Image (cartoon, rainbow, N blue to C red; front, side, top):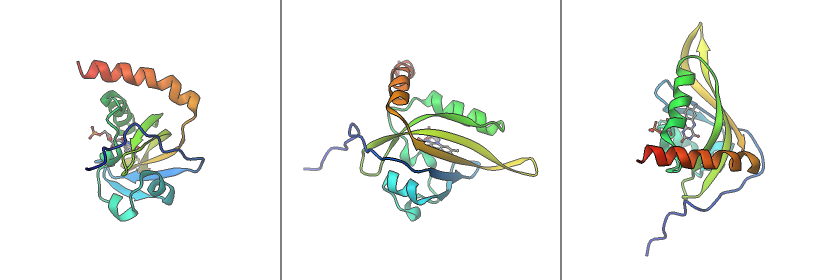
Length: 137
Ligand SMILES: Cc1cc2nc3c(=O)[nH]c(=O)nc-3n(C[C@H](O)[C@H](O)[C@H](O)COP(=O)(O)O)c2cc1C
C-alpha cells in the first residue's frame, strides 16, 4: 500500500539562509543549497519550475496575492510561509521577498528565508486557518 503523504509531519531545521530567485512569472531561476536541503528537491528538479511547486494546501491564497501585489509594484514583502517538501512534510519560514531591479525595471524576484520561530508560527496559524476557511466557503 502506498504511504499517505505526511502533510501533517513537520520537517525541523536549525538555521541557515534559504535563497531562491524567480523570473517575472514566478519560474525558479536560482536556488541555493539550503533551499534544496529544505525542500528535498535537487537544483535540477527546481530550476524552470513554478515556485508554487512547494506550495502547501494550508496556505491561504490571499497571502500569495499580497506577496505578488507587493513585489510587482516594486515593494518588498515579508511574511510567514508554510511550505511542502518533496517527501510531503512541511516547514515554516520567515520570508523576505523583493523585486530585483535593473535601471529601474523589475526583471525578477528574490526571496531570502529563515526558519520561523515557534512564536511566529503560533501567532500566524489561527489567522491563516481563518483566511483559508473564508476562501473555502
Ligand atoms: C521569489 C519568490 C519566492 C516565493 N516563495 C514561495 C514559497 O516559498 N512558497 C510558496 O508556496 N510560494 C512562494 N512564492 C509564491 C509562488 O510564486 C505562488 O504564488 C504560490 O505558491 C501560490 O501558487 P499559485 O500562485 O499558483 O496559486 C514565491 C514567489 C516569489 C516571487
